[in-house]
Length: 506
Image (cartoon, helix red, strand yellow):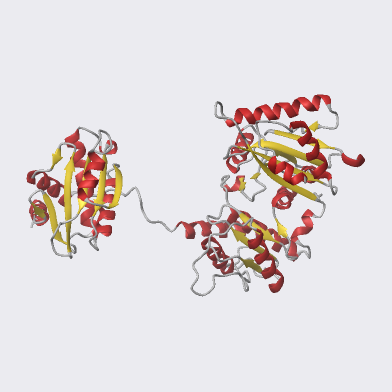
């Protein structure tokens, strides 16, 4: 049989599905591949009829409650989107409701398809069509079916991909480079407790085990429990991890956020490696190899961290709170020729230049584990890198809601308060504006004859109409002393709710 005969026979086979102005057939005939072709052909046909390109077209799609409805609807949508057309997925609905919702006003949709066959047998299904001009004619349906019979659906806009395996393979290569070891199991000798109660943690435990890490004692869901969504900054998560590290005598513990963008670490003594300590650790690792580099952090990092980075031969560059702000600033600095290998927030968001400045807690954890093994082989501990970090003895964060900003943006009120504080520094030499402040206002203090041993920062929240107040002190009682001065200055303000600050000072 020649090609034209095959095409003609195929078209006739498809045309058997037409039932007046609808399409109907046993569900086994409505295979995914066939329905995808139908969706693609429909989008192309309707675009031509409407005088548009397919990528300017929008179709609404709904279904009834038949068991095959969800599968067929999904396949139809894949075909429509393969033509670059948009879809309004109306889900399970009544046909009149969907048609009116889609076509009730100009511009919402150019047409609609309902996956249904009314009262036909339960193992049948089909399609009803409508456009802004009304329902289709039988000849229209035949034209669409003939086109579907011979069309080739291009690569879909949505395809399946095993992103995890590809990512882990790249991470294996990075680990081999950091360890200078191309063995199949380069991490033999390390014992790490992984919080595998989340999906990211479960995948990571398997990854480490394949590289030779002893992950015995890792935290896993109880029998019958689903994988959890964890916050690596949570005291409960860190406490669970610390206990497991001590019981297993592990070298490290690691936990991840739900999507793996942040990591929490616990050292061999069960102490968290977080916030300023985490930044100090990563900074020391990088500056040991590249002295003089610039480390970009968020604005609420400690004075002790600045001194630590300077002692390691680096430059501490504070920028605005928000991991995207920090990353974008690091990218900008590199574009200007400044050597900046890291953008990191106190919350645990970390992006390395050699990882494309992707916000990646899994990459961070792997890099730390490799460093820990290298130091273990030399008889040293990982955390000895941060022995010289000066830690504050007090820290506090308070959220102060803004008030009475109906007639202007809350950012304008926040700036008014900032300017008042900056003006006060001109009159009071005990208040020193931080020279590297790039967000809100940061004031440093020299308490009890020491230098730069307390500070507070007041800034606008990234997301909410709130001013966030952070304070730290290297001496006991220092936070209350400096915040008491702040309260005296802004007491009676009608711009911000001071009740949380009063409560902290009580």
